[in-house]
Image (spheres, rainbow, N blue to C red):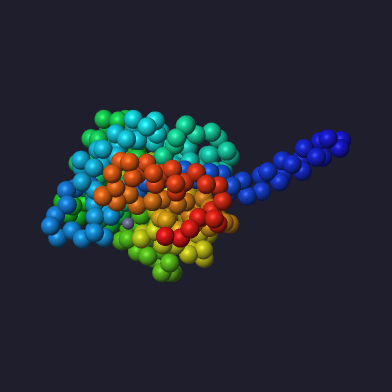
Length: 258
Ligand SMILES: [Zn+2]
């Protein structure tokens, strides 16, 4: 009896805050995949990776034994402790840029890497710069995950009233109509979020949400998963250093703000 009580107590203590205590998986965030132009500033180049650099980074991940995972695997790991492959990483692409399909996809296919594409639904097919619905569907059919990035890239912290429906619920449904699959994951535009809005994401049926470099919310870590923007000027070696230095830590409160 005593033995089982002690076991129960230990089990409860271990379960408390287990999600927040689990090691963070390195999640890389990309935007445009194209060669730099003369007018691109240093800041722009954080969001623009030349295809040759992207290819070199993916080769490093492959050669170093990293295993790109998808959000369902991460969610199961964070919520239940289900094991991940060794050296897990996640590759994510924001903003619907067409070059993610034309330039990044062939590289990912070469290494058999799957990725997550956070789509701004209102941009689909509106310009040659953006993916069309056929491309979004193809990425999904090829085993990649299509996630929601609002309809118009609206700041999550400023959503109110009917905007929750238009910017998130309708955008989610539109993506589901294109892919025929649930869109269960969300990425905050600009990486910005506020705690007050997080219950809305649960209410609208999202399993997890992805921010950028700020620490996770200690009370809702699954809705504030960290990612790092991978600048186009990071060599494969620099990327490897950042993956090792920034992630894998268990306590989100000890992460420095950058
Ligand atoms: Zn964005």
